[in-house]
Image (cartoon, rainbow, N blue to C red):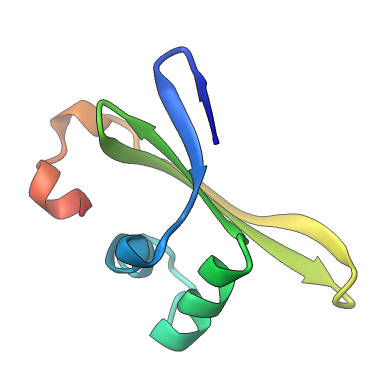
Length: 85
């Protein structure tokens, strides 16, 4: 998608599902997460090849989009890269 100040912003892909499921407190079903990823309703921020941020879109009355969750890792450079992917 876009890169700003070394942070790359992109839509989540199928290969990101484990990370998304682990960090989204409402993610209970993998099928639901796959659906949201397919509809580009999950946006990730990467820094240095690691996921450091997460945004989930939701909809009111299936029409009005809003941000349902924003997650930014506090100190992403301290997180073991194996835990991120």
